Length: 417
View 1 (cartoon, helix red, strand yellow):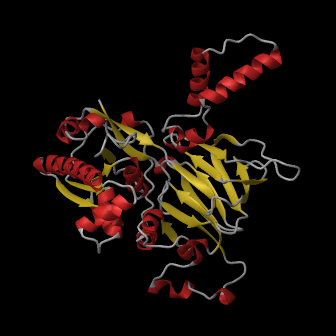
View 2 (spheres, helix red, strand yellow):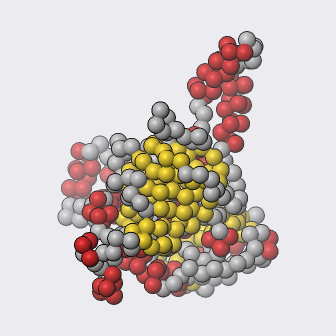
View 3 (tube, helix red, strand yellow):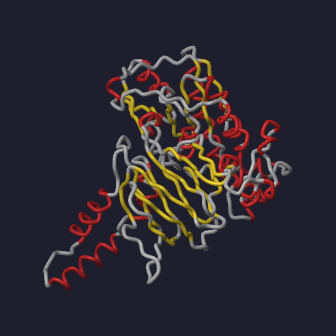
């Protein structure tokens, strides 16, 4: 599915460059869609049924019980999601809007082009998946959290509208909202036949549809029109380097590193055009303002325990008498952690070198920082470049990735007034 989608994206030339202002106030809050595509999550119940279609309901119940999972609980969550999904589609149709509902494997470029507006029905993961396929600033994405008791839904409409979407729709139709731009990361790959690298759909991996290593070892798209490019290794020119822009954008973050977590990642890093630095670590994460409150924050944030220990050491080393009561510890911790986050509209990225190796050979001058442009050259042997936890691209020795934020790649979302 990932192979088909990305091949279509390359061929349909969907890299629309719409140079409109980053200031949302310049675009009036007008919401009058005729066609809405609702991208629905796959509930855990649907996931289990998809993986084990040969099991009856009673057999599935017993299989889940053997794994310590609760069939009734899964069915309850599935029904909540389904009910809230129906509230979205019914509200839209009651206003004469044509609606189509798809899940990830049905989410194609043709359906994206068909719709005036894309809506995600699920949690933040569904929102990120839906966002990755939207390559124009003109098409809004609105998220509805269909199971607010189990999903934070940071990127979605407030939880109060989860089961009452008609109220949110009334506000949208009345223009009682603001456009909110969220910057995204554009990825340009350069190297040996990088345009032929097959992406791996990480959701398909969970479903058992793909093996992670198999697709990453296949250097080509399987299509008849690509025949002239499908050369045997012995026939490929040794200097066949190419440059290609990946047909998806990262809204949250990008991870670069070895696919096996136990392996050390080896690469070269250049930040904002500065000199290359060879690094070994557990991988590199690069995120946007949207993603700065997610994985990046959890990697870098101070805990209460760490803050308390740091303040104690400061007192000992400086002969100071700084109060280290609970209130001070909490305020220092929160102030530091808040400094790690920034607004989704800011045209910058933040990077983190995870578990950097620092010894007599390797060093990391700045294991964390902000940047306008980041370039990474892989020295790995079985590495990936993963986008928003959804798609993974092979990124092995010699391949180079340039990461940047451009105004035309921003995602249009909404904030209700």
